[in-house]
Image (cartoon, rainbow, N blue to C red; front, side, top):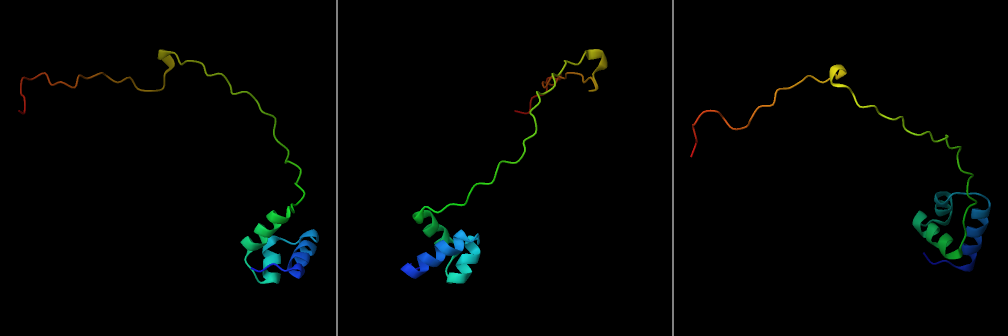
Length: 90
């Protein structure tokens, strides 16, 4: 877009009035990215919003090792991968 003096003045006016980049783009009949680029080149920024309330961070609870008697997993028998027979496929 060709930004003339009138276009830049209108952009600054609309931005100061609180309009969004999309609203300004529709008014100037250009893309939103063109508006955002010109705002960046002009150094215009919105005032930052205050940070949202952050919850207090609590430490993670310590995990206790489970005793074998109270384990909820079923006990599995270890099985060797080698077959006990003498059969070999090759």
